Image 1 (cartoon, helix red, strand yellow):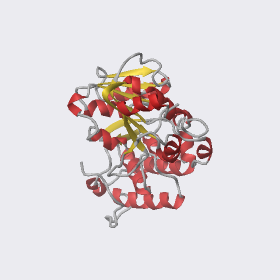
Image 2 (spheres, helix red, strand yellow):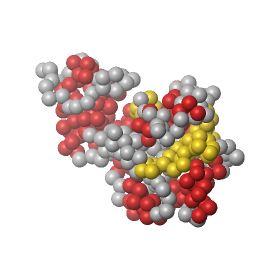
Image 3 (tube, one colour):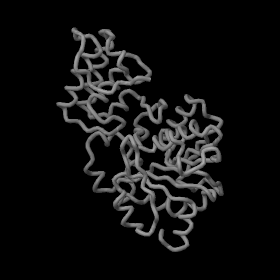
Image 4 (cartoon, one colour):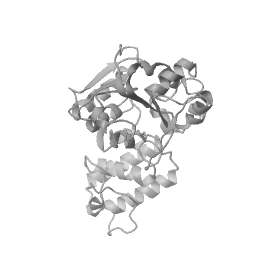
Length: 311
């Protein structure tokens, strides 16, 4: 699929064509000095997502769409969406109720965090070189939210079964919508649980999590766009590390011998490094950008527990 990659510098004459609308909307959004990072990184990304939605497209805007004449009704819808994005500081994905992550479409609303984790790249590459994809049979996604990580794992590991775990029933309701839409009801189990509490003695080849990791001071300084996201999916105690501590303490007994733990901690990376200086974290890098994601093996976690490196 050839998706839009830039703001068009040349557009056909006329205010009703998609290229002209996109260019003007991008400039308007740029002047508004909004915050980005909720699945989009630039004004043109927001404008393209809102225009595609207004035009009734169920895919990202593509270069070929820019030559189309946009109907008066679609133009009206587009302007209304732009107005709300600017006036109410609502992230574009919450206005369209749709986003793409790891090459898959997901329904998203204010009950869940907007998918944006760089872990998508890791999933698409089947966690290579850290696991043998052919040997992966069970995966757990802790704090699943929209279900994007769990469901993408099920797609990219077609022989696996996945537990999508979240303590919030509202989040699981959104994950259920996406599970149904992607046809994965037989292979992805939705579990209402606070991390490992309801998982019993289950063991997994991969445990992956994008947990809350924002501290109190950082949370209070976030741009208005973040106020539309569920607070519980962002905040994790005063220092942002409550969830990380649970994962480090409890993951070892839920991993197979060759299993791995993958966790996103974002800007909390420095605090995590300082809090656990003896842990042999592998901090992953991504070709498409992003960071703050670590990997530990089952053996490393067990050794850390024995030595008292994690409390």
